[in-house]
Amino acid sequence: MLTLLLGACTKNIEVRGERDVTRASPGTLYSVERIGGYPHIVLRALIAWQGLADSFPTHCGVSMYRVHYWTTAADTSLTIASGLIAFPRTDRLRGVVSFQHGTASQRSLAPSTPDPNNGVLASAAFAGRGYLLVAPDYVGLGSSKQRHAYLHANSEADAVVDLLRAARSVVAATGMTWPDALLLTGFSQGGHATLAAQRLLEAAPLDGLTVRASAPIAGPFDLASIALPFALEGGSRASSLYLAYMVGAYANVYGEALTTALREPYASTVPDLFDGTHDGDAIIAALPANPREMFRDEFLQTYERGGPNWLREKLIENSLYDWSPRAPIRLYFGSLDADVSPREAEVQALRLRERGGDVTTVDVGTVDHERSVLDAVPRVLEWFDELTL
Image (cartoon, one colour):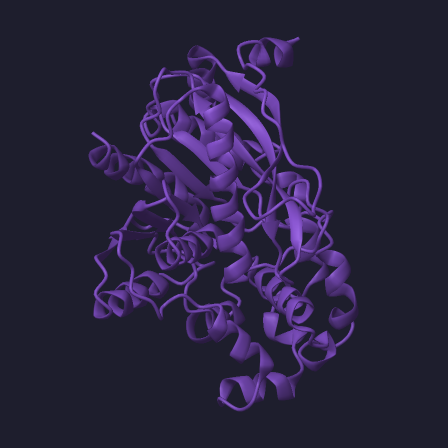
């Protein structure tokens, strides 16, 4: 009954999608379905129940839709991905916010589920303030059955940009006007995806998709020299998970044998652990607390002394410091983050400023990884609101 009540004010959107791959192209809409929504009073109650009433002021209710769309996978094939679009229950859209979610090993924890910690809260924070919220699940998560290419910059960027393209078709079907302001933000892996998408949109501009501002939160950017060595220290309960996810994904994308990097039994078990059905706790329990124990000694030795190493080469290829951003960037981080080094933000800002970027860092305080996003989002919203007056 509650589900029926919450979805009652969320209208169906009638728009024709393309089901034939031979006629589809990246960004073509496949389908859109209503998944529910929240009147403003219910939305406020939900936020208060999460203890976030003061941090997430809202102005309106939200209506949420799951969108399937065509995009390019890591192997360059055309595939179908899913994502969330949340409309504010208002007459005009203040702007478009694309929110990129953090690390998720289960397909069911993607925004379009909608998972309470991704889709619903993101919808409340941004659509509840009058923005159109667009949140990709990424290829391999949500409805996609492919293996997720974790921290693969190009496929992350394609998933973001192609969902934005599809979202324009959905907005047009409602009769609303696509706003001028496109604002990017994302947490953890989503911080990496956010800068990857900004880089793509600025290198190959699309009409109506000009980035106004970018606000990554606790994101890894220098994967080879900062992210991997930091994770190898094992400071986070999830350090082994991050490394196994990344190494397994890169081996799959680039056709490398996991046995060259990981010792047994991990070389054999990691692909199954990251098949999209296991939650983080189950994966952490199956991996060693000390991440170095997963790796072959000779592999780490060549990596750490700078010798020939396929993983180092691919991590450098997927890092995000070798470009010149046009839109202003604010990099948010918590100083007690044990999952993503706070150095990532400081070093990234320095490098991009040297390339002419308008980049600043924002220390949200002595908070850990998970808390950093809750403390950063209100600051991100304040900045976005200033830009869309």
